[in-house]
Amino acid sequence: MVKERTPRDHSLFLKTFRTYLQYVNSGLYFRREHIIGLENVPIDGTPLVVVSNHQNCLNDPLCVCLKLTDRRMNFLARANVFNNPLFNKALRAMGLLPAYRMSHEGFGAINNNKSTIDAAGQALTDGETVMLYPEADHQDKHWLGNFKIGYLRIAFEAAERMNFEHDVMILPSCNHYSNYFHARTDMLIKFGEPISLKPYYERYQSAPRETMVEINGLVRSKIQEMMLHIEDLEHYDQIDFIRESHYGKRYAIEHGFKPNYLPSRLRSDQRLVDELQKAYTANPEEMEEVYKDVKHLHQEYKSLGIRDWLFVHDTGWGGVALRALGLLILLPLFMVSIIPTGLLFLIPKIFLKKLIKDQMFVSSFNVGASALISVPICLIIPLIILWITQGFWWALGYFIAFPIMFILAWNYMRLFQKFKGAFRYNTPQNKDRIAKLKELRRSVHNRLDEILK
View 1 (cartoon, one colour):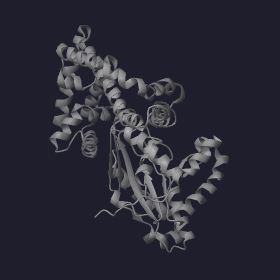
View 2 (cartoon, rainbow, N blue to C red; view 1 turned 90 degrees about the vertical axis):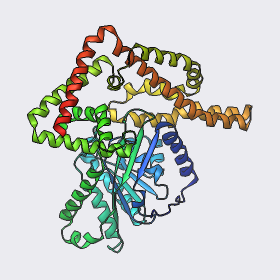
View 3 (cartoon, rainbow, N blue to C red; view 1 turned 90 degrees about the horizontal axis):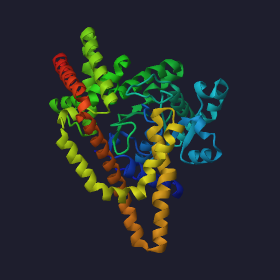
């Protein structure tokens, strides 16, 4: 039975800011959010260290923070984001603590971590939550890196402060996204069963490092079991392309999974990836040939600017004409929707290429830019003006209509992208290339079916 969870008593500023971020994150950016295993999160007052994989920068801790409203959350974040004095104050107010890394801040800065570790330890002794990412940096793939043991050092030192009389819990968790970079996609957070450190207290006091290494291996294995972990990095792009293409969808259906429901699709993808990796171990030469053709298929898709769904529906010029007609009919609605919401699309386009070098910061930048710039300009300021000049009901109507207009504008642009793909797919000069790709795609699918039997 799931324990009833009641929001923790936070300051008015934190409550208001959290509600606002929830609106931007859950109301606008993500289409659907799936929280699994919430009943595994100990109730407020239990010293808790949440440990997770890290693949989407700011979005990873933000999504957890917005869901665990009944606990005081403390996060360890890369130290360079605290350089700005204003950001430093705001981030610390929200429970973020700087983590200094030798690879980024240099060896001399490592000593600064003492105050962070002390603050995190104090939070645990106060029954709060510390969340961190033992990989020490985010990944750019569905893959779990090696874990540092610093989180266990913080946990055991907190237990020592309490004279080893109170339990400290480690909560393995994972996050997963249907797409790292696009808005209006799905995200998932999964919490595993908490691991009590109390049975390890006695052994830790006599052999601290060996004990922490053992627990670290256990925690990492629990997280790897929950997430999508593509271990074969040499063929990562090919494996990822297979699972994301229609083959991955068909595989899910044939094995009793729901391809459009992210928790179910994750389980299907885990199984498919596991089978592909086992197939490579058993038949490396045969799988090399398959991956070679998959790589060529992927490159041709990118070169032509098309997607795999076009081969499934095999849309002709009639389909292109219908999409063009739909775009024309919906154009007035799009214009009405894009005028008030346009900055949410425009600002990332203007600044992303200039400011973001690491692609895994794209979605974090989109959420941050929306929360700090776009939404205040597009929603809050017009809302205030309407309230003052036209009254409460006009302001309320605009507030309700705003996310609907954003979703309409986003879907119209997606329809336009599909129209462009369908046009390229049917262009006469691409006819021979498309015919060859159809045959290659069919061959790849048939060989995969045979191998995975």
